[in-house]
Length: 139
Image 1: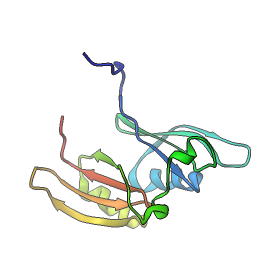
Image 2: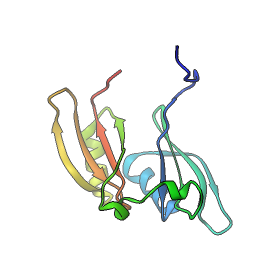
Image 3: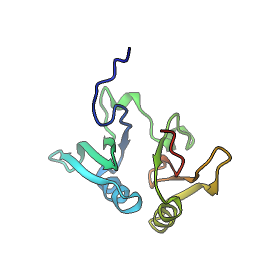
C-alpha cells in the first residue's frame, strides 16, 4: 500500500538561494525550467517559487533566517558538498550540457556515456547546488 497521492509528481525537490530572483532566471535560461508560480516578498526576496521541467517540478525560495531556513545550509557553508541533488531526465544531454556550460554552469563531471545506460553530466549552478542531467530513464 502506498501513501503517495495520485498526482502528477510525488517528489518535488526544494532549494534555497541567497539571490533567488537571479537563480530563477538562471535556471530558466541555463537548464530550460519554466516559471509556473513565483511569489515575491515586498523586499524582492522570494517567498515561494515553482519551476517546472517536463512533468517535474522544483520549489525554491530565498535563504532566510527562519525555522525552515535553519534546517538547510548553502553548499559554500559545507565545503561545496551536497547531501542530495536532483537528476533530470532529458532527451539530449549534449544539448543541455552545451546550454548549461554557455550559461556559466561549473561542470563537476564531464558529459559521458554511463555503464548503466544513458549519457549525462553533473554541474553546479551559480550558488553551488549540484544538478545531474542524463538520458537514462529508470521508468
